Image (cartoon, rainbow, N blue to C red; front, side):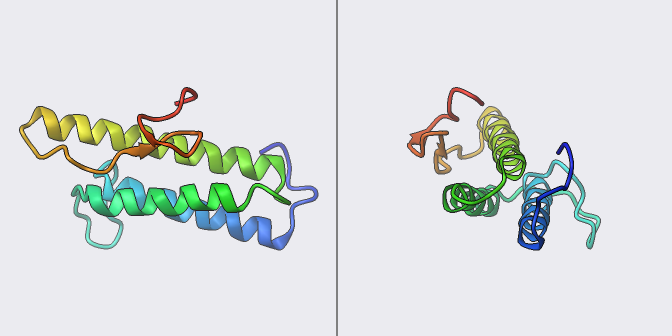
Length: 117
């Protein structure tokens, strides 16, 4: 973000929420260690649910949210979608059940990540 000029308290709370959900999803994807238990594990169902919450925030926050905050939110969702797809591919390669829900694309349609991903 270039600077915090013009961001409201709610903008900062939204950014904090996004960072928190992004961190939780990375733990759920097994990309980083759980800070509480120290364990590393993969829970694709929970990761998908958390990504869905962030996608909902993207849609609901379009009007009235500063462009810098929207870019941060878009980037977080795209990064998590790519990491989710990476874990699905790993699961499929190791013989796991890769029948997890599809990742929504940039246009909101189910399927592969949008063209910007």
